[in-house]
Length: 72
Image (cartoon, rainbow, N blue to C red; front, side, top):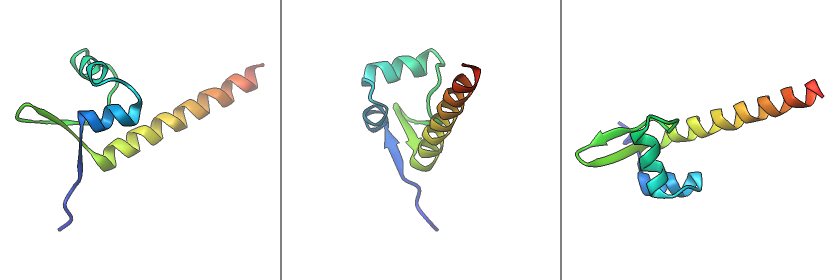
């Protein structure tokens, strides 16, 4: 059985280039954030789901940029 790797909110914040406070605020306000679970008082983010979430954002952004170029 493979063990699943989880990232902390500090690691996620670093990858997203935002402060830990901003990440916590986004979670509290139900703003878009990667899939996560709460383990006691800690917020954990499955690494594979985080990577998929980030890739989806990049693809969405790339699609929006290509649509903007077409409309010019």
